[in-house]
Image (cartoon, rainbow, N blue to C red; front, side, top):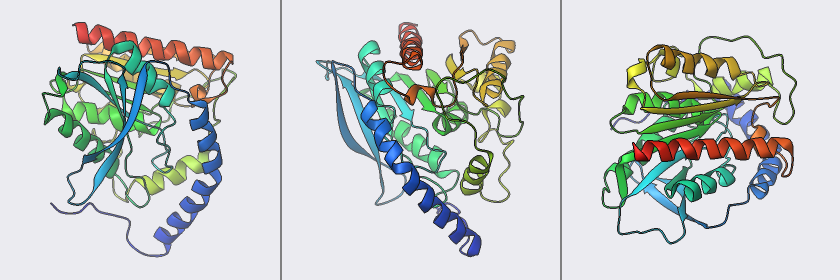
Length: 311
């Protein structure tokens, strides 16, 4: 298999690498604090494993969340989750509370996967890692229920999950969850006017830098493999749940995508608008109103998964 294209060596690539190094160093303390706040719910165990990739000698790190006392002799439903990262930052573990909640409430396994980051590994490295994890699940039908595979993602993770679900198709993917993710990589939607409680305000220069790292020159962001908004509605799974704070700059982007599915006659496509919350609001401080809204959102995801499994 031919290796993926990378940024050509030169001044610009060295600039991207240097700035990425600085930004990662600056963000690292905050990331560790987020992970410490992400306490697991009771009745769930987390174990780190590796999954083989399509590349010889390379594997993918996955944190597997499993409900205590599950029957390992029967194939289990699985949700594969991709954390937010801007396709730039190493943030595996920042969705620990979410992953353990889904495992506990749905009696499913949750594969919280790591994936390659830019600029060292630009598009399509991250979605290929997701495809490899799904291929691993499908290759082991005695362990994993191939009829009940779900995808979920936060921020950039959700941005990767949405078009990947269309590429994999509704036969292989039962449902998708995307939280404050960008479905349309081309169009800018009106900025929300709501005041923000918790969350991260938009930093235009950082967004532009992340895109420069992730996309090689010439990548068409209107391609359905990049932007879910441009994929046929019938390619998406039967069960779709999206959520975003109404003070998040991505709010209109996600709302338009769900409206597209609903207009096409999709039977179970939900968009939940979270009042007065910004980007990554669920990663804030315990005990706050935002924390409680996040708990409610996670429970809504679990309800969708349970409904899908029963269907």
